[in-house]
Length: 295
Length: 316
Image (cartoon, rainbow over all chains, first blue to last red; front, side, top):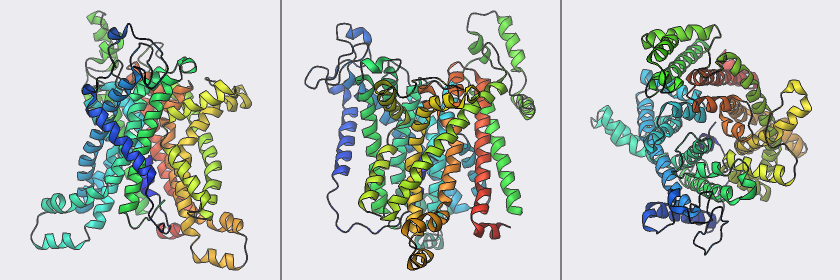
């Protein structure tokens, strides 16, 4: 079972805490993500050191350990490429790929889920079988198999990763649709003569999609990990294009012992980002979902 | 009975779709598979011969059914890369490693998470509960290759407790086998502990609010007895579902850990074959992994009726 589904499943029963304190951890995570996203967007304007082209770093020191305040605050790698710059360019890849994968997944999975939940019957069974088929292959294996046949580009990566998010999103949107379809506003819309398409796209979709936002955040973090795993295995986006996964992979083969920063710097960034998305999703779920008070 | 037949029918449809999907991987491959396997500087005759041998000249549907026929006889073809081994036997030896890792990891995860969940559920929102919940939440955000590397740095490089890489089969001595399996097993278990703990804790908290627990308490039963003998069984259904799903997922998705520790399991087999474009091995392995997943899921469904008498009556 994938983490997001487990998070959506986990039942709880606990009275809400009496007073709401300022959630420092949440603010910290939000700030981290804001800084990261801002840096990723403005990367070319930040005047960073060279991240990709080893021909330009012939005079730079190699394997320099991190020291804030120097020209390479997070150190350099085997080719003298700047780690900070690679982290930020890696963030561009990780965030674009995983966020667009979740958007594609939400659109496709959400549409199928709402249709299955609203129409029921045969359509529901066909979509259900499709979901089970996608779920029958473990996510990472599915991705590896796709990586054998697809060229490793950012677009292909996003499409492949979206396949991982689709089945879970179909299930959750379907379940939510079943609940929403009973509500008065749907009955009213039907009584006013709205057709199936209108009910599905104008009435159900907006409500159902809003309710899966917390789950989407958890999926973003799961897909960041999946993307990093693929590049770590050497079958995702390849060097010289920096990604967090292939940066961590660089530290293998005995280099980690002598130059631990090669692994710890990208690993720490990866952890912070994944943790932040998870925490944001979790807190949002708590706040919005009145049935499940907290975990 | 009708429900059971429907379930079986759905299993068959899912397996059919999975086999179709894995089979069509070859046709998704960009360019000519023969060129991909032999390299670009061979004579045209060599390509033509290989294409003939792979059956690429026949239509896709026909090739699919030929392949499926062989699969039913336990023949998954031969590896496309020299020494052209038999795919079935490659998978058999890799499967043994994967299943051992998965089962050991789940046992370790259960040994940690059951007591942890019980301690947390004892006083919901208490200090221990919050500490456990924060820890598991943190662990959940650590990808396995990061936790594996940290474990290597600590336990192998600093304390020299475990071997860095390598695998020793059970046949070469159980002690050595477990010694080599320990670190990968811990790494995989870390992935599962948060989910198990959270799921069980949630169910325990809910069960502990039920009347029969109250009556047991009123009779003067000690809290640990109620937790272990009264509350645990009715709270374990979700855990069993998650456990089944995890076992099914782990058989293939321990790729990262297998790579990190150079273990000859299914994941490693898929990745190394994938990077060589060795499509027959990838096909066979994906098919076997998916079949396991589907079968284990069906097994979990059956298990419900064994542990939960309420379902047995409804289902019969």
